[in-house]
Each structure stands twice: as C-alpha cells, then as structure tokens.
Length: 110
Picture (cartoon, rainbow, N blue to C red):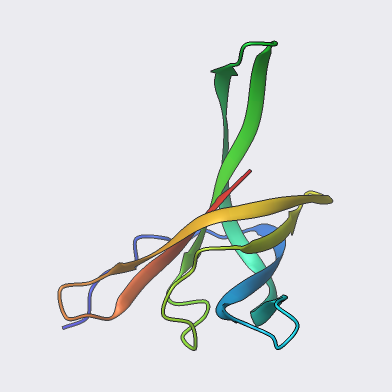
C-alpha cells in the first residue's frame, strides 16, 4: 500500500537552482541541482521592526510532489525564479512517509 501524495495540484512555473553543501576549490558554492518544473506556491509576508524602520519582507513557500533532488541529502540554500522574480531559498524540507520515502518537498523563499 502506498501513501497518498499530500501535494497534488502544481500549476505555477518555477525555475530552481539548489546549492550543494560542498564548495568549489575557489570557495564558491557548488550547484547541486537545477530544474524547471511546476509547483504549488503559497505566498505570505512577515513584518520586522528594526531600529531604523518598519520592514516588511515578502516570503513564500513552494511545494513539490515527491523528491525534487534525490541526489542532495539536504536542501538549505539556492535560488528560485517565480513570477519573474528571483528569490533566495533559505531552507527546505523533504517531508517523509513512515517508510522513509519522500512525500513532498518544500522550499522556503524570501
């Protein structure tokens, strides 16, 4: 018996570049995976108060069915282009089923 997919409707085009935890000989980040696909994108915002001003940072989450980068153990950084805007990936999650398979992948964007 398989587990039901928790992310099913993906209609938003997205281009994702995921960085590996490894670095190049020059100390630059190494690209772990690149893909153009569809996602389920949920946007939101968060307000921060600094000493100088009141700042609103727009953020969002991109959800994908299954494992979008099986070659990477961790998804912690990278870039995503969505709606023509390049956003930074600040964290990622591979949500696992009880048997260890990946049900969906989530990327947190700012």
